[in-house]
Image (cartoon, rainbow, N blue to C red):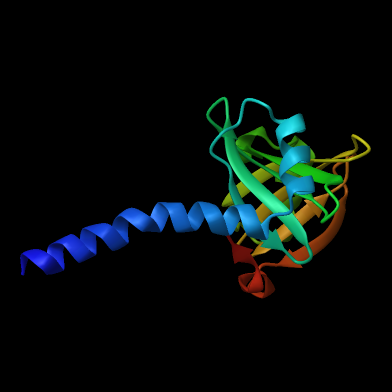
Amino acid sequence: MKTLYIIIAFVLGLSPANAQISIETKVPSKVRDAFTKHYPDVKNEKWGKDGSNYEAEFVVNKTESSAVYDSDGNFIESVVELKASELPKAVIDYVATNLNGKRIKEAGKITDAAGKISYKAEVGREDYIFDSDCSFVRKDDEKGKNDDQDY
């Protein structure tokens, strides 16, 4: 029985090392280097694959954030989580008027590589995207996003 506990402890002890190796081998160094240049103070990011792109999730100043890069390390966009009440009034009004009193579960401010800002309001299993003028742009269905991989 003692041997079984030793084997279990050994296997569990290797798990974090194996997870780190997976991250190192699955996220291209160009991508990790670009992330480090953009966010030099972030140390505990969690990587995942978003289609053909790589997404790092992390916390900055107690705020959940993410950054997306292509496989060459080119920055695509970042998302900073907002409280639903922090969304622009026009976005909140759109949801209240057009979604029959449904509640915004999560919200975010999106900044693309050119510095253009847009907003995201998650309602149910769908993200409603608004441009910088707070005009509705599109609805993204979250159902298909289960194919994404976390590292």
